[in-house]
Length: 87
Image 1 (cartoon, rainbow, N blue to C red):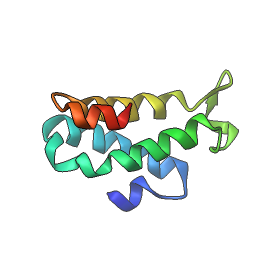
Image 2: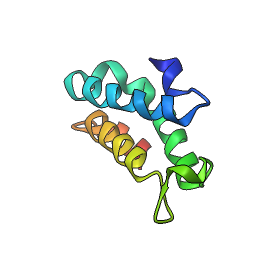
Image 3: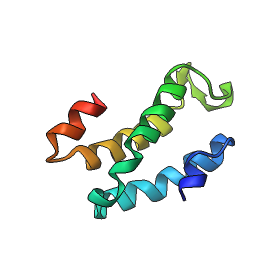
Image 4: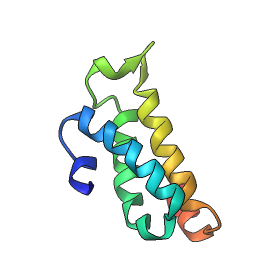
């Protein structure tokens, strides 16, 4: 699944986020190593590096952003150090 998260095809990456939301919700301590990957993907989305097909009313990939933020919320819960790193 880590390869799918970093896949060059944005559709594959977006689908893998659905898996990671569930995994991060149930066992966040095992997936804290993915925070850097989530931050990189989020920065790419915000910088409009995805195809324009993923924009919604000029908002870059809002569903992908939402899923990443959801994962990061689970990973940062009750962990001040991780939360500061994400901020």
